Figure 1 (cartoon, chains in turn orange, blue):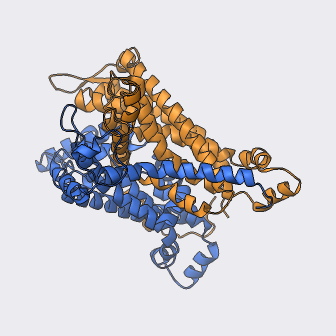
Figure 2: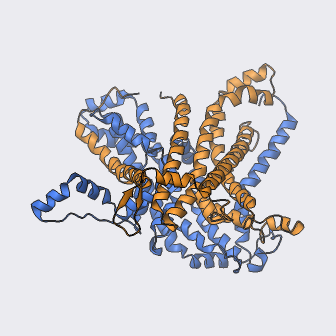
Figure 3: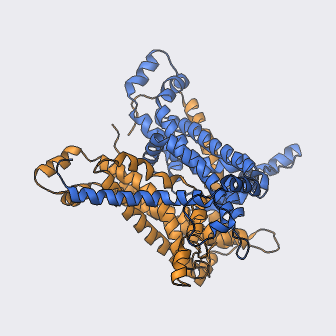
Length: 294
Length: 304
């Protein structure tokens, strides 16, 4: 898509692009290149530059059980929280779209969770799910030792999944509702005239028409679960107990800034980058079909 | 709508109400917990009737985590990111859409690619750059032999150094260096009719005049949407401020929250922690409620 009418003075055009280009060069391309460089070299402990080690950093990371544990944890986290957040949001959006009394109200309230900072909601969930105070304590009184995210890895994973899903239900809800509302009303009314019920209409008309949104949200939820989980993990579990919630971004942070292993952290960043780029390319294929210019 | 479905309508209402409870419960629990005293908040089960210590807890949380200056920092950072994004993206999109200089497609892709990699995954090297923003340029000068040349000619040794750790620019600039807003504007500029541009040119307006007097006023909606999204995005940042504000004076409210987590084995002051959480939650919530329309529109348009 191109403009037919343009301005001829190149200087203004180029000047206008300069601030953005300077910013992305300094804070995007240079660091990304730096990460590649670090991942292929090893910093000498006594200083004096980096020595070239080829793919050794990747080899040592990929043969490290801790790293695979972190990948597994990230995938479990991404899978369950994406599934939960998308399913609940889809149900709520489909029902809100029926436009019964009060649907305006739900449309407003159900998106609030997305505005809350991950660490703040993590704090709230840490209290709500604390084993000795708050609400899971009630369960613990009935079955002592049933719930303890501080000691039990599965419980800790469940807590961060709950916090993350809660936030992203709000996010997915916005997109699902917009997708439902973009479906022409006449289509649904025609189907109703032909005698199909609400459920039938959902499966045969609405659901097929929102599949692009589903794919889009699937990718976004998974990529966000890699990034936005940092605050939740840091506040709720600090990666523990016994690395059960040591997700990939959290491990990059703790290896790079606490362990000062820049090369290892850079190699992990590269792997994560590749993962996200693959997912994004996958997503653009679906977005391309959705974007229309008038 | 078109038919009577009383049972389904009832089920719909029940499920939506449950969804509403789920969305609101954490807010309510935080608010109630922050009104209890130390003993009541640790009661099992905690009473859902508000206690009387609300203002006391708010005050304690405020002073313990030093929230006054921290909220101000958060506010400066969020406003800076929102304003920077709104301005710089508009400039870039204008350049990409309305000019035909050589290399334009290349620049377009250069910017497009930044959409793919969020700050979190390139955090370690970005930190190194911010520690000395001029280091990329120093390295380029060194590698191309220019710094050697300058030293020989003028006798001045080139060592560029400008650290942005513990500064507002360090907090703000890396968060602006992505393409989200540029594409929002681009899509909008592409829908602006060509006749408008022709008319403006006919009346003797140059590129600058057209941009300021025609395009910018037309993009007000986009600006509001982008500004809202970016404000929330920046306010809610955690990892980045945590890294680069080693000095307390530039820490943000969200990173300070960590100070309030009750220690294992210490006094479980959940009431104070929840009061602090409430304070940090409130500004974005107010923005969402007040700017709901722009927020939803911006989210869907930037697909972020």
